[in-house]
Image (cartoon, rainbow, N blue to C red):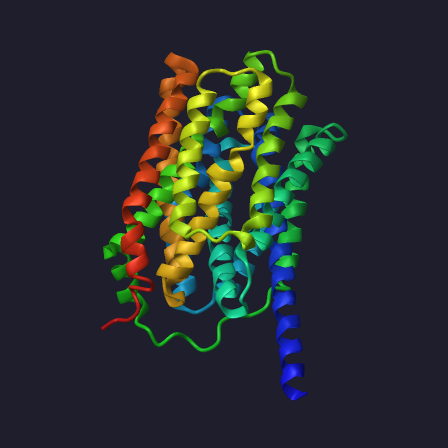
Length: 398
């Protein structure tokens, strides 16, 4: 009887952990859904010119491979993962409120830079927290993470609805309000850390960067996810030029995110190795970009958009599965920082290259993205045997 009660209590604790984590994922991705399309609209509405908008918009990408790894390292070193999530969410809220009071371009840039330094580490910190929860509570990552994808759509649609009701110069308050909601939800996250790890973390973090398996994981993931850069930056512009209206473009984007959500929801049933999932994701991206480069009709585009569930969703699931299997929990936070930094560098570079190719050759830029995706798939397929033979390779300081 006592055993059964303990078992019931453990199940309830796990469900509570998963529910609160899902709520936090939803809140931080809803913030992204509000911010990504409408922060530039606010910048323009308060009189900031296009040149400054471009500079300001580049700040988050810069912090991903500069400040972000430092924040994740500090959180790991002080065994304060949950505390770091709460702190970054709170500072992000304060930052967006402060941004709302600034209209001078340099002032907006400086305050936004400070805000992004706290905001961009939040998702990697949350992924590290989720992976520890996967191990501690026996959870499935996909069904928890899907709420972030769903909330991204809801955030974009919700902020878009407000954009039709209020002056654009007030949109920053919608963004700040969603950031405040994320900060509030973060207070309900359950603690994971007990005493500080006895494993020499500094040694292990260096060992991670000397481990071929870990380097293959972050390189393959960064290349496959980075291959989405042309799609993220130029798809709407291309489709609009082809005569598609705003509703059709929004529907095409929504199809991709819905496919991603379905993959996350079904992920507990997957039996393939994580390295195989990443490889399939890379090959799906390869096929997706080769077809998209042909400027297909909207009906074909709608079908191709379903591949987002594979190119993004399977790659994300496989990468997180590999992190659990190959990276020890004491250094998983720093590992997430390295992954985010690598992804930031590759994505930024891919965006620049995409712009250069697109300016001269239009949709042929997708061929470069196809080459990136194929490279990622090849790296992961080549590393699969090593990863299978060396689970949790970086284990101690000895």
